[in-house]
Length: 326
Image (cartoon, rainbow, N blue to C red; front, side):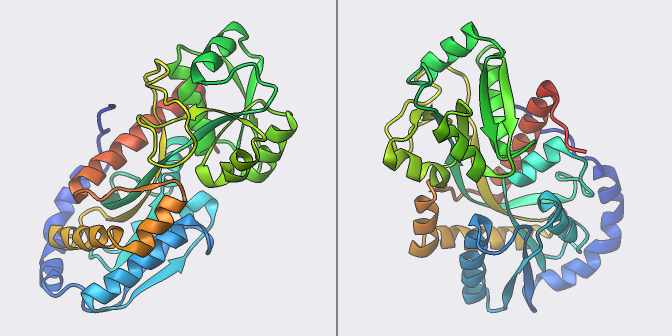
């Protein structure tokens, strides 16, 4: 596991702390005493929204104040995230986001410091990707795929939802961990057209989520080469993991709750405890498992470390593969 990278602005935050802590100390004892904003930096109706709304309802029921979900899409999720970064670290403006938060920080200049301005509060879930191949691809599993790609450098391509997407980064990490495989990236504007071209044989490989792959798997219109997780999921297609295939590789997507770094510890721990309760309830857990994800309650400090490591890992991958979005 890659060590967490240093936080920019830490010294400045430490110097500013005496100026803000007295006011926060007065407020945190009865937090929340008013409406809490839960910002989702994506359009309504997606997976982030589906995680945020049950969480907000559970917070409201348990903590006795309104938790209002606000969708703030734009600029690849950085618009809404920046709104939270500019808010006071008082627990009244929160962010529900996904691994896009980490990949954005790894591949583009953001108007905020993803580590210095944010801290992980609660990890909702993680989910592996499936590695799919067009039916004519001459390999049937990850091990055979590595052997074929190695023997045909620069002749195997893969699709993605676009430059800097988790699909691209996962594929490039796969290539790097398999000994420097040479793959050709074919970017699309979303997973829909990429999936269509995989079935048609226009592209050869696709690293994709379980919901995106569901129809293809059901119709057996593509080959399933394997999972990207360390262990096989409890449900889903029977396919090998990288570890089973002799590869030191794993890649997962995630959803989680973040707050401004510097939010009083008492508030962070309260949010974490109540969020972990919600993950044990039927509605949210059922939705997550339906998305091919597994609820992942853990202490706030563990998620914060996970967040730092995820950003560091994707930065390393992006640098090695020369992936940068201007």
